[in-house]
Each structure stands twice: as structure tokens, then as C-alpha cells.
Length: 246
Image 1 (tube, rainbow, N blue to C red):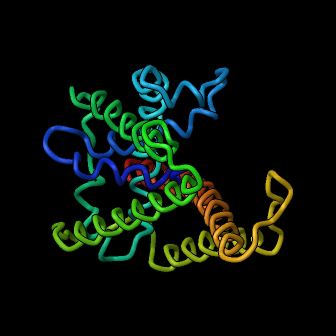
Image 2 (image 1 turned 135 degrees about the vertical axis):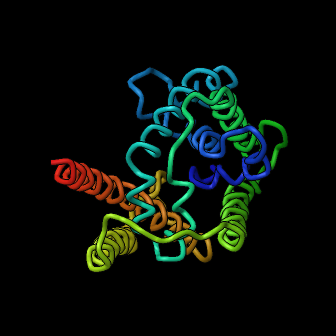
């Protein structure tokens, strides 16, 4: 299936006007997180049109709360100077009362369902090309996100870069998180999981299989590490704020 974190590529053309970009992105990735809910068959429901306006909308709002309340400021503080300068404005406030927030998450979820429907043969039967279509669309989505990030960086106004971390602390956090990601990805290469059918692919398929396993493992540990770092950052920010107010 298309990789979860490339699904926001589908909402890039929609991230303008009154629609809320972060809500679109949260909705676009929400359906694949439904397996975490204590609801029977939530993963199946989340990939239906009913799921888009129910379980997906709920998950997207939770993801939005985690992003805006926990992650965005710490992650911005961890970024290189050029990125921090350009993120100074976007990581400010967030309009939770925007009337376009819920429509945005539902539209984002709809793009996920449509994308999966195309690559899973709901609209077109791909036959032996199914896996190639799924993986190829993930690569194209990743390239589109990369293009958008470069374009945004070149056009976004830069402000004075500031943050809670010292340069030493920032570098230490980068090395710790980067090291954890590298070691985890490497461990998947040295100790790969056995395929569901019990047989390892051969040739280029084996290389691609190793690459995707390493990518999934690396992204998973990166999310965990960033969440842990963000909690520590927020606690530090709270301590600094209380000390300043004393």
C-alpha cells in the first residue's frame, strides 16, 4: 500500500484558500492510524466514506492536537538555523475555532481513501503491476513533498531564529535521535523479519524489500524518539516559564 507519511502529497494542491493545511495533512494520514483504536475493525472502517466523517475525523483531530500542542515547537527548535528562521511564524498560534477545520480533515481523509482505492484496484485492476503501482505512487508522493518543501523554503519569509535549546543541546539531540534511527534501520538489514510467505524475494525485489523494511523501522523509531524529545522539551519550557514568572 502507499506509505502512510506520503499521503499528505495528495493535499498539496488543496492547501490554499480557507482550508487548513495541517488539518488536511492530519486527515490524509489518519486512516492508517485507526488500528490503534480499541474498536473492532476500525482499520477497515477508516478506509470507507463513513469512516472519513467518523473515525478518521476523530483521529485527525487527535493528531492535530499532538502536533500543535506537543510536537511542532520542539521539532522546529531542532531544525537547522535556516529552517528555524522560516518556521518562526508558522509554529505560532493555531485557530482551533476555524469553521474549515473539520471539512479540512474530512477532505484529507477522502484523498487517502481515493489514493488507496486507485492503487488497490478498486477503480482499475492492475494485476501483476499492483505492487509496482503502490510502491511507485509512494515514491512519486515523496518526490512531490520534497519539491513542495524546497519551494516553500525558497519563498517563506525568514525571521530571527530563536529557541529553547542551546547549540550544544540541539546538536546532542540530533545525534541521539539520528543514531537511534540509524541503528534501528541497520538492525533490520542485519536481522530482517521473515516474509509472510516464509520465502525471501530475489534480485531487485530483495533490495527493495530490505529498503522498505529499513525505512519503516527508521521512521517508526524516529517518531518515538521525536515524541520523547518533545515531552522533555515541553517540560523544560514549562520549567523555564515558571522560573521566569517567580
